[in-house]
Length: 242
Length: 242
DNA sequence: CGGGTACCTACCCGATCGGACAGGGGGCCG
DNA sequence: CGGCCCCCTGTCCGATCGGGTAGGTACCCG
Image (tube, rainbow over all chains, first blue to last red; front, side):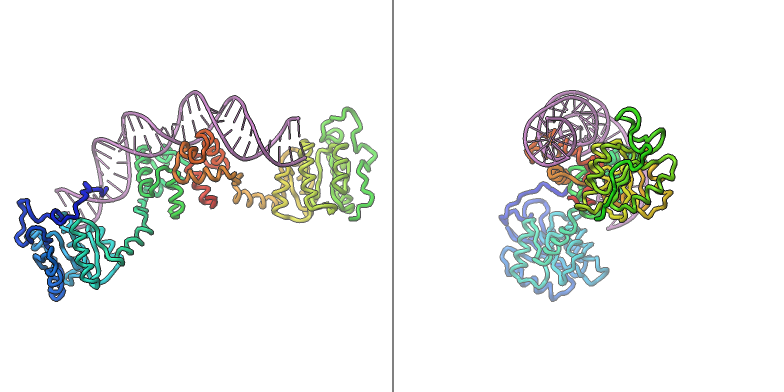
């Protein structure tokens, strides 16, 4: 699944992002080893505050701002920053506009690190942002030092979450052991497995081929983190899925 | 208690005992096709009542009585009846004396049918009596017709239980699918099965051979009424054995 | 329209299972 | 002392499983 080349990465700022070399030079990008940053927030005050904070950091440079999703798209296309500081609440349109923008950025510019910087902590928002490719999630009331630290972390292609959003994820992981969501079919197959039926018989019972049953069984085991049907049945039984 | 006369033997001069040929005569037959019966009850009144009831049946003949376990043993050894009507409450010694007697009879004289005829219905007593070989269990307040019917049933080597004791057994069977009692070893193996381990790995884990593991697995499946390890794990999980 | 998901199918193959047969030994008990 | 239970072991064999590879259809959605 998600096991990219796993570029181990040099924390060394030199190659942290991709500012230099490449034909893709960016007009506003910093120079040498500076992190180019675009701010996306519908409040000018906030953008100004962030700019003053970040410009104080030698290795960072705010190369652009955007107050709306549309502006953000333009800025992204033209500037290709290393980092996007994104407020999910853009206030302009639907409340998923920020999330949608997050999806779009990570899909179209996978080399751009999206760090969500927003006001409220909402479980669903945190998880959804992560799901849509955000590499970090911090609340606006963090210290400036934590903010710049998070930016550098994301620039290294690592994850940066403040403690509260981290615990949200942890909680989610605890209740969601990876993939407990079995499909209808898988659930039915699982029940028959627990009844001691062989793949072949399960197939004749459900009017599908034995091969298909094996297909489902493997998916069930993968989702439940089991290596045998027996373990799958046990885990499912513990989770009361059966 | 008061167990006055209750002479063990043939109070009946006629042909209560073994008049003709061979000590090894077919135990059941008093004479031709009569069912020889021994009554075991510590109350003379009850014995007398039973005797009068049963002697009214042409195909039955009470050949002996006993008020205590000791008397019963003597009567059994000498009379070898087809049927023993046994009251589990003998009142003389320990309260398991009747059950112990039941065990002894069925072990030493397997051809003798033991029909428990007692006053109270106690789940544990019913199950224990069955476990010790009783072929029937009826409460004393049944109709005389039902009693004689039960005796004939037991004489045919079938089971005779009144509706209440039958439901006791049924309830027990529902909660006790035959043999839920796993040994220590089996329980340990079962846990490892639920962890998705193969027989081989379970063996190395428990320092026993793979063959032995298969041995245990088969016993586990048999006891849980499962045909695969997956089903066994499921059943065990339901029964909270795991 | 490409991308994601659920669902379906085939062929192959080594590992494992389930069952049958045929034994060991130690402990408890009538 | 036999009988029963628990525990242990071996060999043989066909059925099944787990996993890999390589497709197919249908649907929804950005």
